[in-house]
Image (cartoon, rainbow, N blue to C red; front, side, top):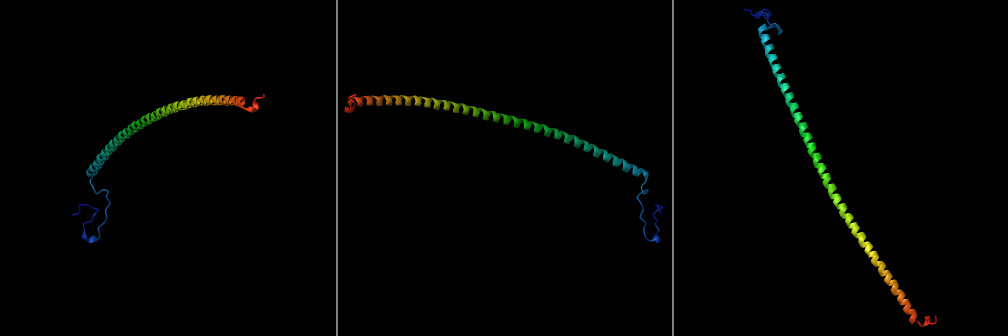
Length: 141
């Protein structure tokens, strides 16, 4: 018996003919397979859409985390800069105080030196006057 008219079952023909796939399955089977394929495609689309939603949520989370990290880094940098400024201001004030102290010491030393120079001048003048009084060479004048 020959179920497929295009496929001979007769052994006398020798070689089997290669049949095309078209018209080899009944239409209800083809429609069932097509419906199953459509369901699989719909499920794949749903999975892809869920993956897109998940990736968008992860991207939003990453962006927010990045913004928080950048904000924290900015605040830390501002705090470090403020600390450095405060320390620099303290050191500048200390240096200014030290410079004022040294300047005052120099002024005091200058006053002392002037007093010593005046005392030496007066001493030299007194010695000169005494020398003139006691010298035999200056008595005639």
